[in-house]
Structures are given as C-alpha cells and as structure tokens.
Image (cartoon, rainbow, N blue to C red; front, top):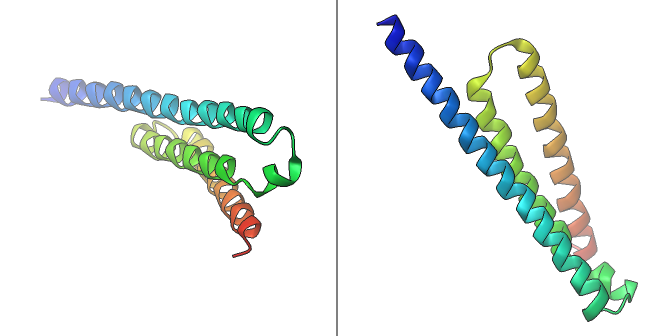
Length: 114
C-alpha cells in the first residue's frame, strides 16, 4: 500500500511540474509577443511619436495578463512543496507578482484617467 502511495505521489509530482513548465512557457510567450507587438507599433505605427505611444495601454495589459499566467504557475507549484524553504520562496514570488500586477493595473487606469 505504501508503494502505491509513493508511486501516486511521484506521478502527481511529475504531472504538476510538467503542467507548471507549460504554463510558464505560455506566460513567457505572452511577454515576448507583447514586446514584439510594442516594438512594431512604436516603429511603424507611431514612428517614435512618444505622445501617441504613452496613450497606448496594450503593453501594460499584456504584461498584466502574463503575470497572472505566471502567478497561476506559482500557485500550482505550492502543491509540490517539499520543505519550508520552497514555501517561503514561492510565497515571496507570489507576493511580488501580485504587487507588480497591481502596479501595472494602476498605471493603466491612470493613463486612461479612470
């Protein structure tokens, strides 16, 4: 019975780590696509007109979305915590990502005048 429990735990650990890596890759891809779009928009659409660029909130929204995806991966990692050191590191990362997301949302809303 103990061997079955150990095997199930190992399978869950492997599955959660695999899903976490996929979610983190998705978050990084969102950031890369958002930056590529912002570079294209800055160069070709706005021709480096920084007044127009400042009114565009697409990068802030994309970064906030990417941080939410990465936060989901961090929360999923809490399932496989093996010691308190990992718990402290993951808790600190979650707090930092929440703070950054709130700052991005605040910056977006202040640009819109809301």
